[in-house]
Image (cartoon, rainbow, N blue to C red; front, side, top):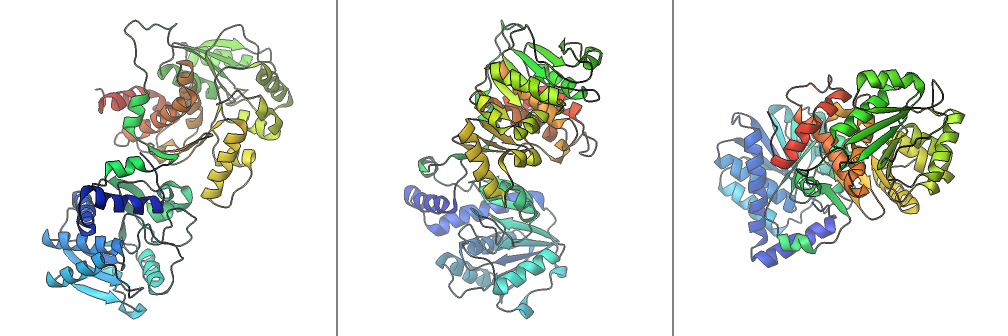
Length: 503
């Protein structure tokens, strides 16, 4: 699904009106109706007192039309227009007249003393500003937003939280619990800096012209399940372990061989035919006991890696997990990079070693996948002031070294030389020890199975996150561990392929 700028969204709105032969007011009805359908499914108690806070633009018109729909359905609704300007859009002014005609409780707010007592309401619906906002919020709008955020009430934002800039850093905005956005994802809704403003994000279809959307050019995308379904390779009836790829997992040190166990098991569970683990001697009895399906290759050293020598022919490699940064290990890693040309995913200490020796980045095969968490990323690309600068610097880094960078976190970002992808699977349950090791194994497996690196990155991150989504009702996020990811990879495949969990 395309992620577009505010300007592109305005253009699509205009083209929809032209292509579909409808009025702007009719499009507003579609948007309000889509929000209403979502809202009434989630908030079913009609005794809840609902206050809708609208602006004077078309987002405010959306809010007033929502007020009309909810009032007609029997909800207890009051509508307010925060009059930060006397210049109403035509469609917003129309809905002000209709709200009054339909005897919906209504008032204008022009000064602080006119702001309602929010403690008298259960739900606040924010329709203050849309995606066209270009300046910082001041005056009465700022006062209203401040009091909304201090109210402790449930806040639901229409399209974007009031005050959130869709394409640049935001410092002050409505702090919504839920954001119901209209059909086209906005990058700002998925950035860590904005989470306190955005809350949970839901996309609703409002009938925008598919032709207009297709005509919009972008290199930013939100990954959806259907995208992943299209990328999955079919499994032949005549497949065997020799046709499904051989993944080599390299890592581990004394006390950290569990990382290799997790990655190796994840690799096999993701579908490759063979998995070998290269690790120090101390890890051999561990992995042979914990995961006998893996083949173990020992380093000469008992406690950490000093050489990376093997006589097998893997199809792809995952390296760096639990490896440590001892000088001997760094030298072994360097010698390995000098001769390796296989598809590869690098994580953890592999990334930390690269940050110590940035000149080694030139040795990486094109489209090598790096999987840093934010701190590991900062060691590679330097610090950033906000998420937009982070993306800019990570993109320049990926382009310079011809790499794919996965920035792990809520809504993991996948950045290559050409595109940015936002992953929307996953929950906070994934914030657990070993989660990144499992992702390394998943991606290494997909590379070994012959997936193009960009596809392996997207499929791997989505699969990884989906396991947490699927267990929300059965495993509490606080109790979720990395092994639960591995145990649910199969169900994630079932869900992507069939839309359901196999019982």
